Amino acid sequence: MRLIRLLLLALQTLPVVQGTSMPQHATAMPINQLADLAHAAYEKSMEDLQTRSVRVRLGRRQYNSCTRDNIKVRREWGSLTKTERSAYISAIQCLQAKPAFTPESLAPGAKTRFDDCRDAHQPDASRSLHGKLPHLASPYWGWSKIAQTSMESSPIFDGSDTSMSGNGSPIPNQGEIFLTGVHGSPGLYLPPGPGGGCVTSGPFQNMIVNLGPVNLPLAGGTTIVNNDSLAYNPRCLKRDLTTSIVQEFANASSILYLIMQHNEINDFQMHLQGTPDKGDLGVHGGGHYAICGDPGRDASVSPGDPAFYLHHAMVDQIRELVSTLPGPFCYVYL
Ligand SMILES: *[C@@H]1O[C@H](CO)[C@@H](O)[C@H](O)[C@H]1NC(C)=O
Ligand SMILES: *[C@@H]1O[C@H](CO)[C@@H](O)[C@H](O)[C@H]1NC(C)=O
Ligand SMILES: [Cu+2]
Image (cartoon, helix red, strand yellow):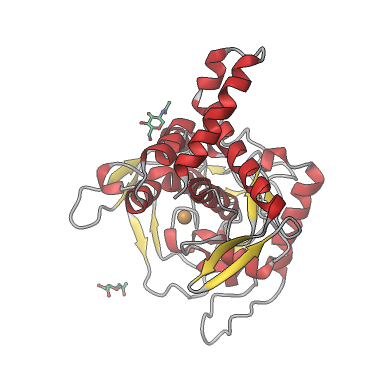
């Protein structure tokens, strides 16, 4: 990890910011510190690429060479133009309209090319979508921005034509969600959100979810378990947007703390992923369980919700902020 260098870079930017008319306390706000850090990482990558190509690890013994010509910028959804948002939505809808590559004998439930991405929930989620849409730099969901407002009012989930669709229809008096603990640990209760039913607005309101559920915790405390993770089970996309979950687990302070205070890779990974048995979802789990619903709340089939990829692009950004190298597919973040 080259975190120390990055921290120094970020700190070097501080006097400049403080020298302007910006009030000093504004710089100290976690959300601004995070922005400074991300900006320093971007500048650093671009500076490195000015004079040479940068070798990044793509996988086991596989490397990619990032240059100024092949570098792609991933942007926060809210900073895309509406035309760019629509283009991304169309790309996802295109995958949903094309027949799957996966043979029916292997996965009867995989009907579309979007379903082929079900395995996206691997350590590097961008890999799957990248394989299908190599020219696309998936935008990301800046969790901490939403943590300041609400899921439903954010441009990602506001239900408009240029969003990833909104909340599910409201189901009154939903009970809490119980995430089973591992190794005999107590588990964790999460509050339900104001939705819970089928998504009724935006571009994905009529989409069909084909795969799962596999291990789906429901409001009220029960869990659907189904061992056949590849079965065909067509149903609507459900969501239960829960702002309090993203606020509690993926706010700017928790992201900063994760990046700054975990210098050992295993420790970093544990805190990124969260330890639900200790009551901590981590920033990663914070984003997932804030989307909630079906398949969003069901870890192994959660890539079936199109918002998954924006969430995981943010996970990628955090990993890449720590290494200060462009991502495996030559991504930088703005
Ligand atoms: C699913 O698999 C587990 C472990 O193999 C087994 O204990 C359980 O009974 C199975 N459930 C169903 C519904 O087949
Ligand atoms: C921010 O996240 C941390 C860690 O998850 C949490 O302890 C804290 O309460 C959160 N802050 C707010 C304002 O929710
Ligand atoms: Cu995930």
